[in-house]
Length: 217
Ligand SMILES: C[S@@+](CC[C@H](N)C(=O)[O-])C[C@H]1O[C@@H](n2cnc3c(N)ncnc32)[C@H](O)[C@@H]1O
Image (cartoon, rainbow, N blue to C red; front, side, top):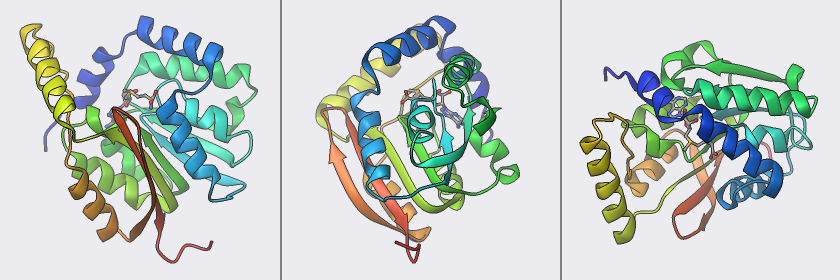
């Protein structure tokens, strides 16, 4: 599907927003939905893993997992503002040499990127119109585990997303949010050879942890 998503997404996430998210993270630690991903990944007991964090924003997932689970990380993001803050925090933590930062739409650069043990997408599928393309490429890159968060299919989010997108249209801003069908995302990952190990819910976000079938325990 032709898509200028990287350009649209880059504009949608501003410098000010990225700076304020990093400030909040330094003050309060990971957000609740990110904590669900971190707990799920840590429950697998992996060590010295390679992590691929797609749409990592200010980089919370790799800042945390490089302390105990991952030896190296690749952070691919369509937002240059977020990547700037993620790099600053990685440097502050002494992680710069262990993280590769890539400014791109993941679906464009996926064929050039190496596979990883763990793939994460925290609040990313809802920014991307074609979840099959994004999740399919993410699944192909995971050798062991994939964890992601996405908005729940509830009546209140259906209304909220419709209103949000209407507002975007009025503002003439092409960025849209998407409430993708959870059962179809689950089927896609199962077809790619994954089994779902866990699913946890918050009011807005749901987190699902998948493991590649046959991956060593
Ligand atoms: C709502 S933010 C979430 C950031 C971070 N994961 C978090 O939870 O704080 C969505 C992020 O996904 C990125 N993104 C969306 N679609 C992407 C794609 N196709 N490839 C790479 N990054 C993408 C955006 O640039 C943005 O940084």
